[in-house]
Image (cartoon, rainbow, N blue to C red; front, side):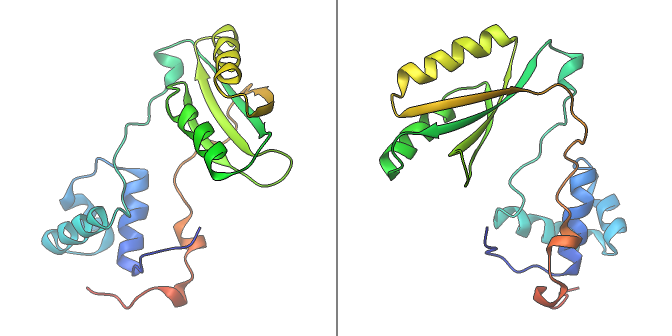
Length: 170
């Protein structure tokens, strides 16, 4: 994906801090990134306005509140036109148990991450999707047995080329 906003080192510090503690107060955030409260708040609002920060969410331990199974489905379509892809993506978007969907290259067209009450519920969803979209050629299903590394935020310092950062704005 191509970046659309240039940020500076302080913005990287703000984003990194928020990824690990999204509920941190502005005063605490300002101290972590080396700014006073007002400039920190201004920068934070600018990052939100530019949609660099898309939102704030709770990190829920689903196993503590619901029995569930997570499934990764690898989907191949018969036809690959925009209309066919759009129809599939709309179908997935309307499926609450589909918590993420990625269009990919390689042997499959999409990876869809599902979370369901049971394998039986997934099977019903699977059949329903195939019935609703005859363009689905195949679905390869993999049950997630355990999570071995939890998403903990993007490695911003490793992804952002220091030479591409805009000069610090203070």
